[in-house]
Image 1 (cartoon, rainbow over the protein chains, first blue to last red):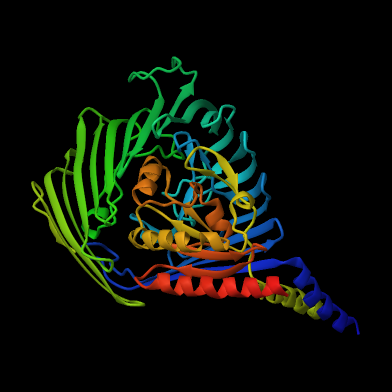
Image 2 (tube, rainbow over the protein chains, first blue to last red):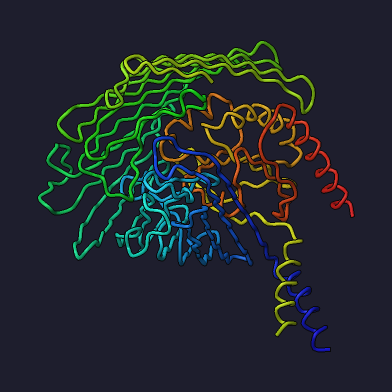
Amino acid sequence: MKNRLFIWLAIFGAGRAWAQLAIGNTAEYQVGNLPFEKPNDLTAFYNQLNLSYQWRDWRGNIKLERFQRPRKDKDYTELTQRSLRYANRSLDLALGNFYEIIGRGLLLRSYEIPGALLENPGQRIRYGFYRDIEGALLKYQSERLDLKLLRGKPLLNTFPPNFTGDLRRRHLVDAVETKLRLIPDWAVGGAYLRDHRGGKLKEYGAVSLSGNLPHEIQLYSEYAQRLGGGNKRFDLSDHSSHAFYTSVNFVAGPFGLSAEYKDYNDFFLQYNDPPPLIKEHPYAVLNRSTHFIEPRNETGWQMEIFLNTAQGHTAVFNWTRADSRPFQNNNRFEEWFAEFGYALDEQTTVKTFFDRSEDQLLFEKDRYAAGLYLEREWLQQLGTSLDENLRRAGQTGAGAFG
Amino acid sequence: MRNIIFAIFLFIVTTTVFAGKVPDFRLQNLDNKTVSYSQLKGKKLTVIDFWATWCKPCVRSIPKLVKLHEQYEKQGVQFIGVNVDGTRNLPKIKPFVHSLKIAYPVLLDVNNDLMNKLKVTAMPTLIIANAEDEIIFFHQGYRPGDEKTIEAEIKKLLAAAESADEK
């Protein structure tokens, strides 16, 4: 009788609970050899299990990662994330592991790239591609006010999960961010972050302004700097630890334009991720090589123009330039990109792109790339696409076909 | 003890039978305003499209969704675009939306909060929710012709919603 009661309670309770269990698993088995290295056997198995259980406004998550290889020297099985979260329309409370961003990431940004894996180049250990925070988060959102309070240890994902001690989470961060929307179309924000590491305390502050100007012009501007330590307020010279980012975009008829500027100096906090102002390419020969920003010293621009006609033809022009000086030498990265799409009819699209770049850090003087993309929709669920790309780089002599 | 474990297991398994719900989230739109799902959702159906500017299939699917939105908006179907681009592409989104002539609301999920809540792991992902916010259609990826499947689903769900209204 008692047993039946339990079973009926479970079924009846579940129906009322409106709960949801989600299970996601990523497994990867790798075989191969690495020439010129000892040991050269690359055979490895990696598994990541993500479990999430939702009940009304409550959610529990765990992430379990396992890595194995035949020589069993760096195997691990770790419960790398666990969290409990409560969220309704205005309030969000998290305990455990979570992802969060302050402003546009000048001070702090944590994220996950689902399904992607990282490999530690020294020890060839594989693990999930995420950078989370372990601690507590409280967020409040309304039409006029956003408030964020957090305390936690950001993950330094250069170290795989089998690294013990506090190597992976060396910093303890307290942060508060607020955004006010008192005037229609405009928002002002402020943030304060305190970093405790090894008995040392560093303080940072940030202010931001975003809004809509007449004629469909949109503006975003954010300035962050280290407080104290001899830094003057709003100093953009090479003597202050600061990060300044601003963007403006504009739309007119079939045209759209975006322009961005960055100025980062001595602002590598290990858990921040300022906007890099680099074109993200969907084309195979371009998206494998990109410019990595240097928050220790980098300035740069990016401009992009879009055109979309009523007939379905498209055009994109992008220009990017970054000057970095982490040490003595000045390194310049510059890229020009143009893409044209021509809609032959409702079902057929032809796209072509041209790209030229130079990257002094990679010793690439003139890297040219071009591609042709043809897509034809024949019947429902049946389409054909042809993707032909070519890339050739000067100086290094490297070439690639995709 | 074994019965308790069995009951807990049964509770968890039984609950998975029920579809998920779209929570009443708040996100920022392209005009710097914070809007909630309850403000935007459709009278009968809400189509939520998760996309990013770097995702080629997403960009290919959007003109088809724009057409479906024009066609079904007056019948109580509201489309909502949720952009999941990171901070590096944020300034490009409004011009991009403008160039693609997206007439339905586009919200910014920079921190991927909504994406995680709805268990979206692939781009593009299209979700259809009914008036009670229950997720009744979940579609990942885009191939030419998928818009016909989505349209057939909208028609079917609209017919079901109308017959439920009549009862």
